[in-house]
Image (cartoon, rainbow, N blue to C red; front, side):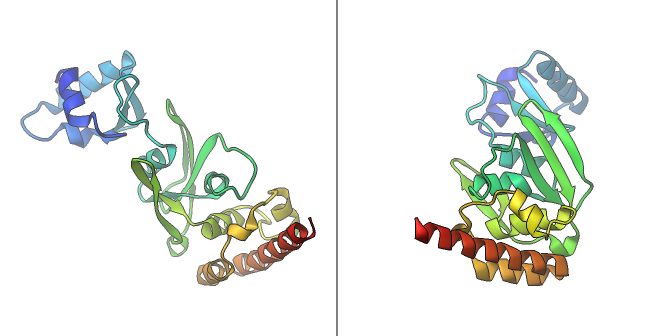
Length: 212
């Protein structure tokens, strides 16, 4: 396969799998060897086994990190600090994309950034939606579920001390009914305790703004 042919097939894809290139009458071993050569010379980024992205200047659309996370591990959705920062609920800019999966946890360092995947039980794998990211889309937790996922996975995540350390902000963006419903659906007392603390922080934030 020549590089021009790769651009014809995958040029419009932010990321692509090996399977996209193996359709039709092709030599699979030859395609994989050529991919390795293009990775070596910097024309293609390898994100993990079988997953690639075109490198600049060949890419037409820069892959959004949230989309990359979705494609790196399936099933998964972006959550925890990455989602909270995206929604403006924490002030920190997170250099690592954090996500949850029902599969094995892991961490990957790629040319497009670092990605951490935390394991979540199947019954807690809910509360996410398709988010429009310009010309791309990704599965991302709702603000309420991103916070509850972090609470669940963090030791003592339901304590006022831990939640205050997060420096939560813009809590008016949380929907109280959704937060309580998701905490109840999660079926863990830890989530229900945390929801009550979060709503108390939300009310305190509202009262503080009203006094300004």
